[in-house]
Amino acid sequence: MIDRGLGRSYNIGMKNVHLLFPVPVYTNILELDNQCISDILETVTWKRDTDSYGNPNGHTSFSDKNDLLSDPRLTFLSDRIDVEVKTFIHNFIKVSGDRHHFERTSSWGTRTLKGDYTHEHSHTNSHFSGVYYVKVPPKSGEVLNFSGYRTNPTFCTGSTMFDLDEFNQVNQPISSIKVTEGMLVVFPSHIYHHVPVSTSFEVRYSISFNYFGFGEFGDSTNYLRIKHA
Image (cartoon, rainbow, N blue to C red):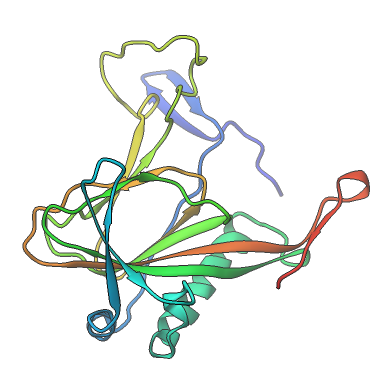
């Protein structure tokens, strides 16, 4: 049965505000050998990233395949992520498993040092993206922020922008997830997100990835078939 109700409600006394069209974000704690993963990440090649203003934007792993998780030493992690991502897509969002299959198209490591951060961005050429947190020291940017809107909020048009007395569940521009070591987060690729500046002297390690959906879409005059290479 499909629940076509009004979604979550925000209650103030007897009054209700219904929050429509939620953005699904999946989290789970994976009990894996993160020390082993950290040791592997210590051996990869890293390149320095900067944002458009030249500010330190962390370090990204470099590989010819653009797929860090294809490293045979990380098979135990890549296999688990594959199961979790497809659980989110097919079991929770209920995307058809008969018509669509999803494959990882890229993955990379992120190394964050003191003063580094991750600028606000989304992921193109993918349908679902995610990140696995390998090592998350205190004050290292252990919050993943999702931007609710970048141009205009959902409660008004783009022609005006209201001044707000406070931010709450109804009007908030940012939703945050406090991340911990071993946490996996999966989300729609088009959602903008960022990570604050690290003030820790310890390194933070994470591994990000993209998944793309292949198969048959629609029917009749809007039919589309996307084949895997």
